[in-house]
Amino acid sequence: MESPVYRNGHECPVSVPNGSKSSNDALLIHVAMTLDAEYLRGSVAAIHSVLQHTSCPENIYFHFIATESATPTPDELTRIIKSTFPSLDFKIYPFDEKLVKNLISTSIRHALDNPLNYARSYLADIIDSWIDRVIYLDSDIIVVDDIQNLWSISLTGSRVIGAPEYCHANFNKYFTDEFWFDEKLSKVFEGKRPCYFNTGVMVMDLARWREGNYRAKIEQWMEIQKERRIYELGSLPPFLLVFGGDVEPIDHRWNQHGLGGHNVVSSCRTLHPGPVSLLHWSGKGKPWVRLDEGNPCPVDHLWAPYDLHRPRQQHMF
Image 1: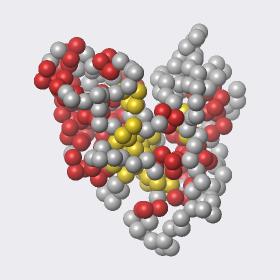
Image 2: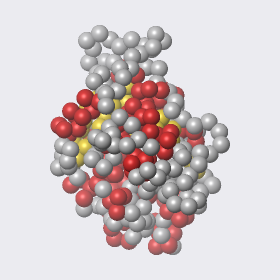
Image 3: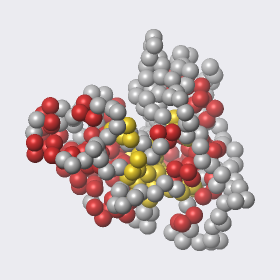
């Protein structure tokens, strides 16, 4: 299916005629996402939701990361995105899986071992160097607010990333006893109050990331993990180790996560009370899968209106 054409409202700033992307950068909102076959349907729905709810859709520029060796190829993905969103401004960047293949340790969920899950650690190197800031979004999200409100959040001091934090979560459970019993390792949190945050929704200062060489810091922890087994959850713990206690807190409305809870008895997740700007189906259950199976959770019907990349002859539930 093809998306409607979304145009800027009268209140939107006007870009420089015939200007380069860098000359218009002050007006652009940069959104980074990964693209692959398994989550492509979710990615398309996420893009659609962003465009539908923002007042200045023509000022949004998407940066997509895809592996060169995968199917669909980057060229095929380009055709799919262009045919679905004819007026969308975007670029697809190839991700070299060899960057992380030898650093990845097995996780408690096989899906977490996909090299593309680690692409967010390399955004500052992959994306054009003139781009200093992005919003990173997972593919299993729906935005139901103007993404300009997320973009406008300031990263105070020298903070590199901003994300909703969850300080009531048991932070200790994200690392093994091997980590906590080693004073040299666990002292990384000394003098800090680290809180859990979900890396599926982040505002990232790429200029500060490059200056601080945060890619190397994350890779160092991945190397320790290969030797010592200090965590179980894929690409998330290195972010907690590097940024825990130094994250710009963003309102929880911008990541209502955990909606991918299984749809067995009593395990469908419900929305938390209060305003919601972004819904996130983190977890094993994805809304498009459950809808196709005819056994959706109630929250999956909130995702369905944004579904543009449906397989042929699919029944609607």
